[in-house]
Length: 636
Image 1 (cartoon, helix red, strand yellow):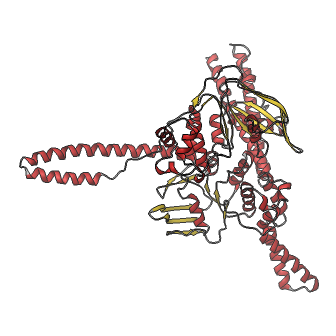
Image 2 (cartoon, helix red, strand yellow):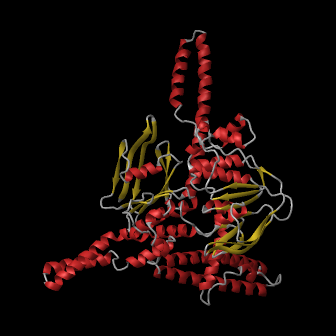
């Protein structure tokens, strides 16, 4: 069954500039589709068309009859004085209406037993129970806990919340409504890592249809199974996850480029032949002239393939200052509180040259405050921060500020950097500010464009400690990749705050997890950190027979002395027992997952444990096979 049918959509907001030019997309019931495209390509316009906020100039939109559509980015206006709890309760409006009618019917039955009233009461009771009328509080608590909406937030006025908080509340409300079709417009922008992972778990179990706009590549890989990219106003479709899309897009580009080059080679060959025929015709051979004309017509018919293009890679890099010394950064007994709320207490850390550190933690734990203390913008309550004498910092804050936002881009570069007008324009061009764009006022730029401009200005600085606070926020995927190319070329120290797991995994070699006022210091990648946390959780909740995940199996299974089949046989048997234990634990977790199918939070915990055990089991299988092969070789 088709849930969404978009056919031939055309939309232009400026005469002659079509955002959508024949966009068509069909989404089947239960599908998860990612809608991609550069900022301004028309993604949000499509969503607004589907919800009736914008009318297409041409084309049709069809939503399956009876299906409820929910848009995350659309925040309804609620009555004045509504609290967060009141907003969340609107998700249960049909159930509340049933409850009121049941109360009225019960009162009627107390006065006079009317068969029709009794029949209506029975029917309504069944519908109320089927709709989860007796479980509304439980459902609300589970969703709120997953999205970090605490009891104190639920009592706050909805109008007093930030835009990000309102988006989070609206997401919770739509989940509670059991919407049939979810339209997600950048759903992870205002979620921390835990809330984002909870949302991914929810979408895995969601029975309805999902159409998602997102620049979060990790989220796209987890949440969508098909990709529709807006290219020149039309949809180009890819039947796979985001990772598949990246590979397939490159394959298609290479295929088109090969076709274009083959076509151009043939055209060149025919042009040379036509030119030769014209030379012969010049000498009086009319037959050759006619053949030349026919060949030229054939050449024109062959010019069907435009040369495929792709975004140029960033051609600039940070100006680096050489680092001297052993210590780049030392944090000693650092503490910071606001009123009765302690953000962190007695933090001790040290950083040597060349380290790349991700500072992670839930929203509100104090990550940005930590960075501001490091930059001298905040004062700690206690403790100190020492920077090595050769350290020079480059800083990209989360909220970009320019002293003179009324200046255009070129003047901003000229006043801030020691460069000529041509150098300023060249640097701006390398960051995709070209043509008339360079004469825009800075205040007219979007948040993502301002981040890009600030990064462009940083490129000229000679630095050896780069600090980034949410560097990929508000950026489309292309812009994120430009930043990544610049960071990849940079060889100095890197400290960054981010919820972009793709970015974290790509660059972090050390994780600082800020939670409960302390920082867990983990040396390794983000994937390794997640596996470490999952093993910790598994160990905490493991039964006596469970695998001991905190001890690497290779230590247990490594031969105590070389040679000897007897020793190898013991090691193979030990490996077999370790595999059996892990397989038993995996079976138990599968049963736990079935038992917890209706408990979102518990199910998410089970999934994390299962992932850790599967990783452990893969390692154990490999070790078992290695030892078994070694034993066969020793016997042979």
